[in-house]
Figure (cartoon, rainbow, N blue to C red):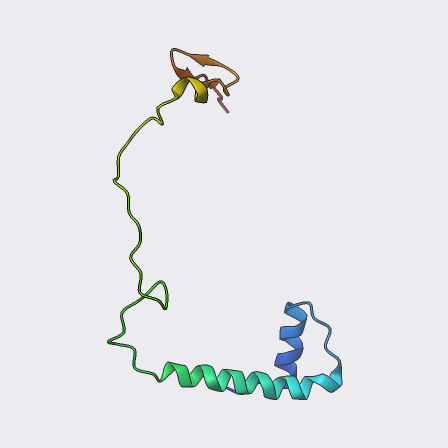
Length: 95
């Protein structure tokens, strides 16, 4: 894929970057080089490489998946503008 001056001008407009006419040709060559390197990365065989979340091997800390109310429902309900029988009161909205 080759990048021409018109493409650079369109990219600059989309990115809201002012590019003078004299800078279009060098930028086109630079973007063309970058895209060439990206195309080369596509040729690398990664079929045997497992996905990873970090370059350093690490185990994620896990905790037990337990459902709880937080242990302080009174404090939570104290923030509500209105409550009844231990629940938030939400007024009915009908459109």
